[in-house]
Length: 424
Ligand code: ADP
Image 1 (spheres, rainbow, N blue to C red):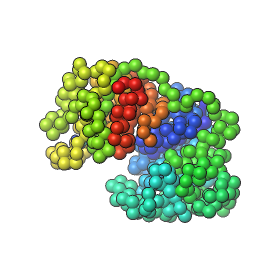
Image 2: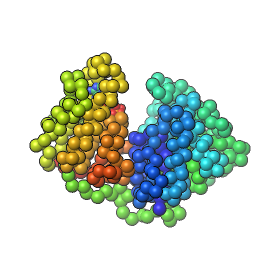
Image 3: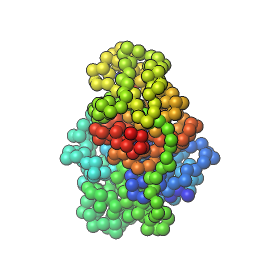
Image 4: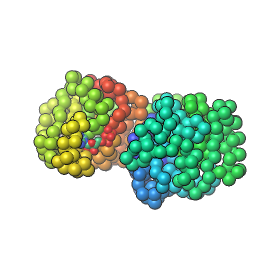
């Protein structure tokens, strides 16, 4: 029976949280969207429902989050976690505040902490202000984000504008005294009628203490960092199996391939590294602006190459090439063309016996997972921080997927990924 039920406002954020829970001793399964009533409940300690609600209309985000909560309750979860980005990505209208308000009401808990801190990734909260590296959130570049510009680093104010409740602060000086002091401060704020407490944290020790203080909270909200302290609560209560590797995945026999649709610098660099070692095809959408034709080129190229050595197929291109395709087709149509083509290639690869697939790019991963009919991902060990191997289950054959958000991973990420499947 699952213990912790999580609702994540985007796909890669869900994986990040799931991976954090596995590293700290919980078996975790990520489900894609809210499962239908009666769908089998995965065998795991934590279940993470991945939504795409970060920038959805408020009503839709609230509706989907409540549906996820209802399903997680039916799966037996006793504590709930609303996961958002460690840079508190949201607009004045939400969706963090409205979703949290709806969850607090549905759970009847009256109060929840809010802590996006993730110190090892440079996100810390001090006096309620969110820092990214050494600078305030609103000077970090996030103030120019195209969808969720963050122009105020004071999270007490930011959340205050999004909620119908009021927001207090548990400051650094209290957090630094440990779990008992944090618990007392949160109880005090709740008694004063505050619905939320922004909780300062600048170290993992703080996150551990906050987790311990929130042991009996029905709802916790934050980034994946705050999940560090939660598994220990279940372990202390004797609810968590202590033996075995929570990230152990069964072996899956089959070929290995990489599909790259991210045009981030990190991914372009990783492709460059891999190209020296394995057969690599660069798709040219400018020459062939047709998804089907591109996919056919790729699959024709693949035929005869699959064996013990992985193959890499990339649409990824430097900014000037991307700009040329966008100028020709329009930004959205260019993205959709490549996503369709890579999704079709993924389907073709699976039909040809690929069972270990690495996908680079957040949107690209979404397109591939949808096309392959994947419904859930059991989270395994990490290849690089935030990118685990996963066991995908759904309408197709069981297979391993590693879904990499564009900027993640070291320069030798693809080679590392192959090494850990034993394929190269
Ligand atoms: P990231 O995680 O780096 O943001 P995404 O997959 O989310 O990567 O986004 C990359 C987008 O760029 C996708 O929509 C993809 O289809 C598109 N794309 C990939 N290659 C090209 C290209 N050569 N020209 C134009 N767009 C491209």
